[in-house]
Length: 604
Image 1: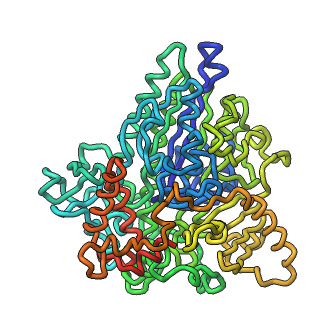
Image 2: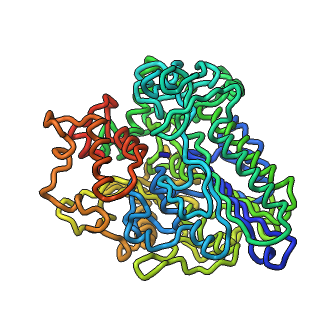
Image 3: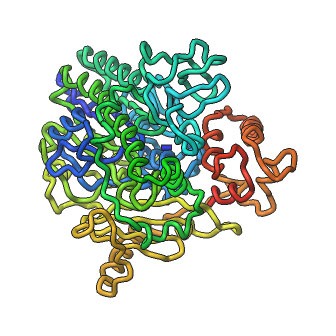
């Protein structure tokens, strides 16, 4: 769950004719990263963000000022852009495992497509939300959200986070410096820092141990150095997944000190900015973005400025920390023979709303949540230090790499798969101001609401919220037909909803037409019996099945026990991290107990 940064590197080996025609690829993915690259002409990121490595990369490539996530929440975003297929095309809209989806399992992922075309494919860290090792030739480390604070029994929020915000939990409810918590000598019995996946606790010493992100960066640099020493041979695809600035916002004190609270700038927030939006009408107040903002301000006794400064400091500290990890990888490329033949792409799975519109989370339809960094460095193709203004999105990543690497455009395994939905951004690399592109006029984002078709067979498009961004406009349409419209020429902060303006009725209608043409209802998949058989059985009561002792509430132990039995019944390995995270998503008030209402709300 995820904000991400992706660095994609395509290295053309100079030592053989084969290498010249088959570029190498290095893909670095970070989580929950806003477009805070400030080192580009007219950069619109946070003015105080310290990102020298991303800035350097941007100045040596093409920066896309209007790049957007198609699914501004972790799992569906990753399963979409790493398969090149919209969630509404495949029906894989939220937390389901992508490799069990009827469409995606019959389509080749980006990694598998490169592997099938002769590449050695290596990865490490958080790339897909649900990993599938056989997509890779080799895979090093699983996704690891550590370091996290351990109290001897459970993972908890950092002690510097006051309540009630700290009660949100060990992941979303935590920020703080690594130096503020003692080292755990035994992660199974003593308090302190730990890391590792959800099923294993490993002690972490901030004085001697690299963080998971630093470990992945070092691994990637070592791999690049090893590939650079090879005289010729098989091209490679290298994927690296960084966690930060995804919560918990835990990094070294030195990064916090780069952003003194008394000097920190906040985005300009208009009082009552949410009043002309519709989001609060369609989502319950317990929805994370609304609840996190409300709880943060409450934690600081109604002092919104102080509350947002504390959170922003921690977020920016993590941005700078992950920027250094990016620098480790890019330096390995630039200090090797690969430098002059390397294409680098930097992006994120989605953004993170930093308090605008009384919202603190991802998965909103507005600019801050949907917008992502996207930079391409391509010697011989991209024009260094230039900016492309035309909207693009993550769905365009896969076809761009296919184009630049000269791979076959057919990515389906069979007739049950789907072709790529996006378009190559190569024309903008060659000329950032070109008007010649076969892609759409705008970028499409879907805000998941659920599969509310109790009777089955209804079109999934009707149940989601949609956001569409052109160079000038953002058009939002909720699943009840209510609309929002923002003019970025005069209102870049999206303060004034113009959807009710009679003068803009024709503009709104045209944007709606363009958006639904992109959605293309003929391709929308219903949730099939193969994808979710239990969800289609109207007589099946999931809550009663989960509620083993029939006390009208479900504990986390009951939830995990059901998922463990379900995995055994299906003959599949049990991975506790996925249901554990999902329970936290559904537990609206974070009391460790799930009610029927919370379960139903989370299924929407």
